[in-house]
Amino acid sequence: MATMTLEQALKELEQDRSLFAPDQLRRRVEALDRLETWLIHAPDLADDQAAARHRRIEAMATDLEAVNRALYQSLRQDIRQGRGAEALSGWSRELVGQEVRGEGYDCLDALVSGVLQLDEPDANSADLASEMVFYQPTPARHIFDFIHRARLTERDVLLDMGSGLGHVSLISAICTPARCVGVELEDAYVASASKSADALNIRHVAFVRADARSVDFSSATVFYLYTPFTGSVLRHVLDSLKREAATRDIRVCTLGPCTPMAGAEPWLDADGDRREDRVVIFRSL
Ligand SMILES: C[S@@+](CC[C@H](N)C(=O)[O-])C[C@H]1O[C@@H](n2cnc3c(N)ncnc32)[C@H](O)[C@@H]1O
Image: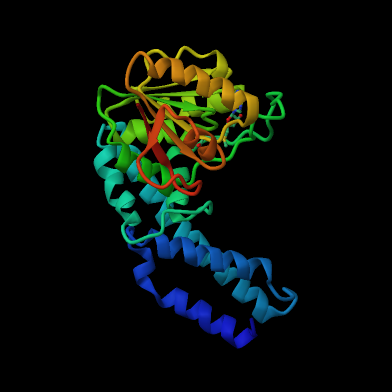
């Protein structure tokens, strides 16, 4: 970007006081992305003018981040006091008119990450077999979309298979009365998710360190899979779920490449298109 254009764009951001309104998270996250790009592509800071502009960019980013931090803190307080569902519902309505499909992350992920404050362990220590998929969180808009469509009640027990840092179970436990359980092979992820649940005083959520193949499924009613495994491991789990479905009605919710395999199960019926880029809710027949 030419110097004048950068100067003008920065001035425009500096003068836009609406960016400081708490509800302007989406625009703030976009502005922070721009500021970060400008910092990365900063011209030679030996030039006084460029150095001064660099400081203004940093100051603007600091101010916007402070607004976000205050917003996250206030939402954390709401959650601790049992008002999480209400507090997050306005944000989940961000979905209205937005395209849910797709893999990318957006400002709702910034919000969820700021609210949950999960420690991110450096590396996987669990020795994942080749058919087990490394950690990647479900994009937040898919979690809210899933919660909205699944209508979990207090009679439901949600089991997130391969729960990673626990986003799906934590947000579901905040926003619904269902009991939520995350099963995960990686110790450090289980510890991080449990710590977040404790700090937010979320009671009806638990994280268990286990291989999903060895878990007792008998108390769960809804199973969530963001393609945690493929091939024979997925086959093993689907066969176990089929046995569970012979004893009661269950729902199996999938996102990503595991959807076609679930979709090929004759004992499961999908709630709509069996596409990989949006959570599909299957009911047992
Ligand atoms: C794609 S991530 C999904 C994370 C989380 N469910 C979400 O949607 O945000 C897959 C996770 O499954 C875990 N995983 C892979 N195989 C597993 C197994 N056999 N049992 C339990 N967890 C497993 C991985 O460690 C990883 O954290």
